[in-house]
Image (cartoon, rainbow, N blue to C red; front, side):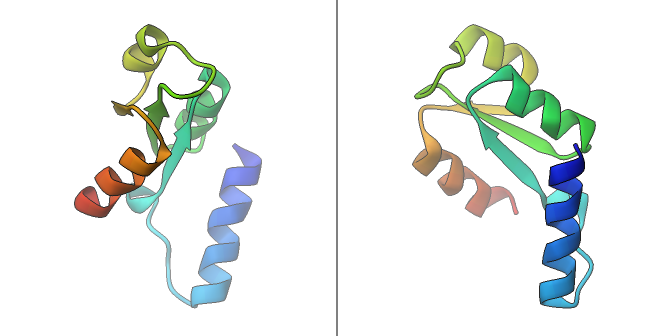
Length: 79
């Protein structure tokens, strides 16, 4: 949670605008990634091309897709 929140703060400093958590997402392949997103109260996209199983990701993520490229394509549509 803490590194994620620090990254959000850094984005705010760089852009001089408020970064809304509702517009922040983590793309990850493990439950640790997803738990970090939940702790920081931001969205979680699970990718099945890594270490996590599809079953675990589907139970814990907001969105699940095949790889990071697909995840970015999805984010371009939802943000």
